[in-house]
Image 1: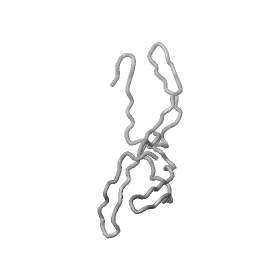
Image 2: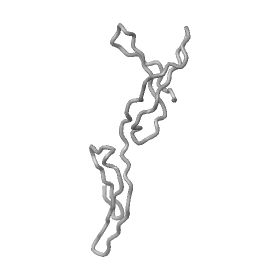
Image 3: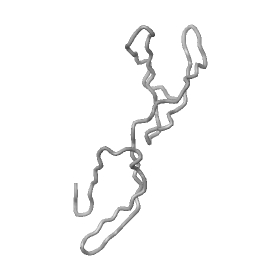
Image 4: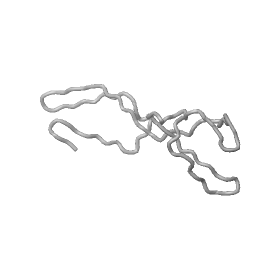
Length: 101
């Protein structure tokens, strides 16, 4: 979308490695102006790093922990989804979707 004073540039299928510092230049028949910009590409975060640590185990519950992913996708991770699967099943069941590490 272009107007007399602005434009929107969409870049499809970019990856995090495409981010960085760039020089943008706008010009017309009268003048030219340049400025440095920083582009940050957000992506899907990597998996949590293990091993999973079982901190407390009782008859009623298990407290376990893990380390955050090496790649957070460019945005701080606010929660995790915890699922479980019985060893004799192929179906995963969501236990919690708002787990904060």
